[in-house]
View 1: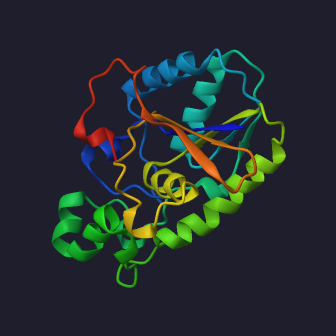
View 2: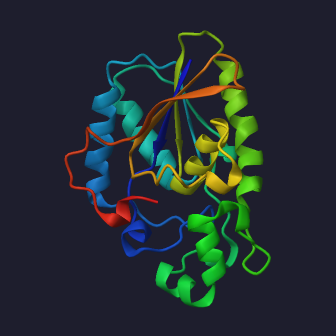
Length: 218
């Protein structure tokens, strides 16, 4: 079966360069709604059995709009295991301010997941996020056991990046080496058992008409 992982549309905090985790939820930008339409039209010819989404508003709204564009009956289930990182003190902080106040934490989060230490800032480590997300993905696979099933998974940039790479067996220290995920990007994994995954497509945004900006990707 194939899992289509989609990052939510771009938000105001994404645009402003702020940390936006499970405790923050700034509004989606007007342009994001058009991009949701574009991803839905891109996926329209693929039959989907089910869609799953983080319950956080920016992901949930993205899921609802993309599913609407499929013109199929695709049930949507909200799963708390698909939430973004819980970020503690970093929540809502501008990246520049984090660089000044928590330089080691910022470097760990962006470049060295194995060294990301939350003792000063609170929130979840990469291992903790992966440990809560993986059972969710395994439950999704188990619930859609037909080998030809396709499912949609709507979540968040940092959490998706960590989890997808972990599913592929990437070592913790190397989780960031494939690069980031753009808003409303599509990444596809294939599995037959919910334990072993193959990468089919990474961070596909070929269907988006807007020129990519640095703040689109995390």
